[in-house]
Image 1: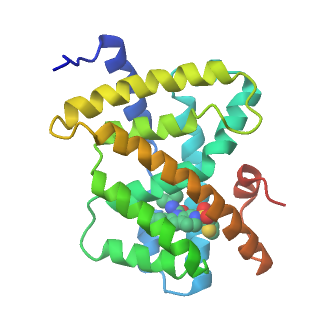
Image 2: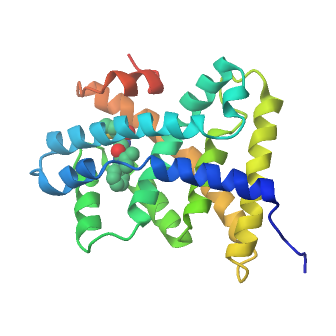
Image 3: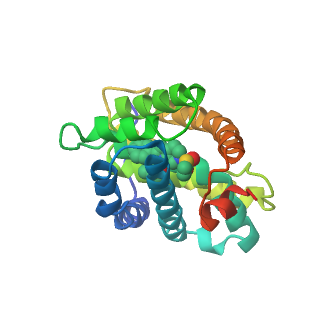
Length: 233
Ligand SMILES: CC(C)NC(=O)n1c(-c2ccccc2)cc2c1CN(S(=O)(=O)c1cccs1)CC2
């Protein structure tokens, strides 16, 4: 039975990432709007646009707090942000839905998402992902580190210094694995299941790209920030 313990510096790393993660929550007013404003596909689409735009701003701030990220090549920093933006959005969405909410809130949220002009074929994989994250019941340290691991994926398009990114991601994975062993001693497969979610997350990139095309066909408007991070028009 391996004796797993977290070093002082690993504890400091986790603390800085969790603080950054908690500092940047989706503002209550936006989620409140999702619960109050009237239903209509257009209305729901606008609310999602607002939430997703806000989340990108939150993502950039969170990423700047990942130890070592700002010492990466600047163009690689951009490549990592653009390459992980959609995955981070779906991961954050799943984490929002796995939170405890006053009963009925979750159903309204889900209903809004279902009625926002997305075609049915994307709903299933997206909601399956939300469910698979919910089943993991991650603690906030795991959520924050998993988000950092997603951002620090070295094989994103246009990344030049692959090794530098891989080293940073490896540091996060080592700590995340220890946390999983300590947090879920009864489930030795937990860390592996966590990483399996990242594979599922990657498949959502494909669906998102298709979603974008279908929305643009119906002339749906996005914010400049979303257009920039998603590389659309
Ligand atoms: C929490 C935020 C980051 N989540 C969010 O905005 N969602 C959520 C969602 C899921 C669970 C609870 C609350 C919200 C579902 C979807 C999105 C955004 N996207 S999008 O970025 O492609 C989009 C932007 C504009 C039109 S479509 C579509 C799918």
